Length: 112
Length: 114
Image 1 (cartoon, helix red, strand yellow):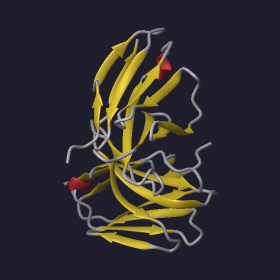
Image 2 (image 1 turned 60 degrees about the horizontal axis):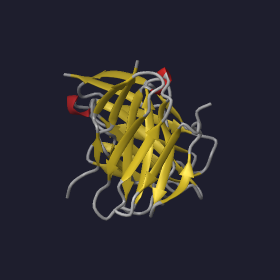
Image 3 (image 1 turned 90 degrees about the horizontal axis):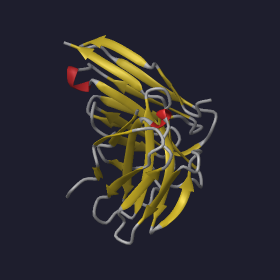
């Protein structure tokens, strides 16, 4: 059983479209991170959200942490081919410093 | 500032053999953690070290072990390799001791077990 359920697993869209990736859990997290991974490379941190209800924007990317700190979403506006990659959400449980729980990932393909 | 360095990048072993992977964290980072990434299971936590002490361990068999040296460099070892150990092994370091979940990953060591 996956502690952090991420959906959708695969997403293929055209350039210019919007998309949302969801990350859900029954557990409460002290913080939640979103990473992006490209083939042959390790994941790269995009953002950390810490406060319930928090919304962070990074150019065309908007990240939201649920009020109950159990879920998060990543919204991309006007997707570009350069956004193609594997998006991973990861949560840190209380008193589990250094141990991130990862979602299964969303493989995003943006076609020109 | 140099990133997290993992060696070797690729290796092929046969069942029953053992393997040692190395990780050099970003300078100043004292927390090093290891993850296994497979297509079926995604990224799964192996263990985390801080100042040479293992602080947390994932649900992997005892064949998987690790250690951290006084210069924060870390190694992980897998003994008696099985086919299912084929994976990308990722090392990550943290400037905050892992307390915020902000990790800096290396490019990984891709292990193939035949």
